[in-house]
Length: 468
Image (tube, rainbow, N blue to C red):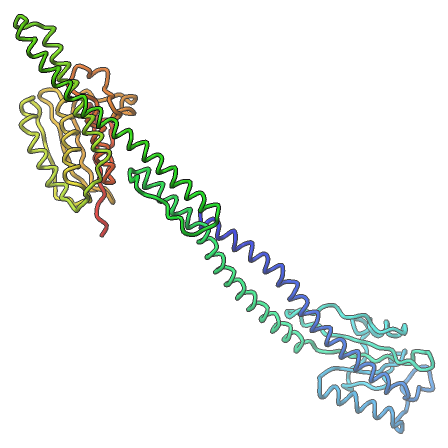
């Protein structure tokens, strides 16, 4: 969940920072250019004040001889010094394009372009409009023109043509400062997002882990209500209350089954004893009394299995590093005489393999599975027991060549008291595999069932391997 929530928060924060940073960058560029434009306006106003008292040429066109005009000479010196110091081309031009004074000497009004447009606009007795914004990647120049007015008439125009390299450098520097600030803010935002998502999702992760523990049989697991939003803390408390109630209900069920099976054993034992005494009063070989005795023994076996199941669901596993191969080989050897008595070959392939398991629990589960396989395997067939390693688990696979189960029966095998309708005449209570599943689940193990080709059942017992 964090991998999905964190990118969303980062994208939103990046969008907010961009929404703030882009206008700020544009504002910085505009402010820098406005400062330059204001300076050029001041410069053109000063040059216009100097040019205002320069002698106007007698003719309408052609150069005017102003050698002795001290004011014109002073204007020329100012323009030359201005160009030498700042590198800005500047000039004062009559309406006929004739220069009154200009620097450098080879600079004249062009026939068209931005300089010409600014000059013609100033001839209309107003300062030229502000130049378009210059960006760091552009090499444009700034042109500012102001009219020279005497006695209410425009007698000349002051034009400045400024390079923008220094201004673009200042704009770029300002943008770099903004980018650095945005980057720092983004890093702080990411750090805050990490802390925020961790704070919000930590109770969710704990709740998920605890739910998994309870689902796998560790009913004592609870959520530690320590941090997180109030809603999640309240959810954690509610979850703990629910888990307590579920555990209490299950404990009551286990206690009821254990007490019922235990309390029924004594009356049943007394009843079986009375049946035995009654049998002595009846003719030998009476079928009815034999049937009653068999049913009584079957009921006693069911009660024993119920008690074992209640204990299996309540007992915690004593996990330890166990040699699964050696333990399985021991159980195969123990069941070999029983298999031989039924005409079944019990074959074991048990290489040394270690895993986390409760030896007593695993032995009991293997006894139930092997017993079931031998019981349903016809005479002359075989039962194979194989130990193997599959990734992070060790497995014990028991396969037989019996009648097997249908797909519908496979879905129900292992349920309490369930037995296939085809096997009702075979001794059993229908609790053996349920007990095996409960025993294995307590230690993190599993039991699975599948078809064995061409016939028979395949039972896979899996236990976790130790992590290297």
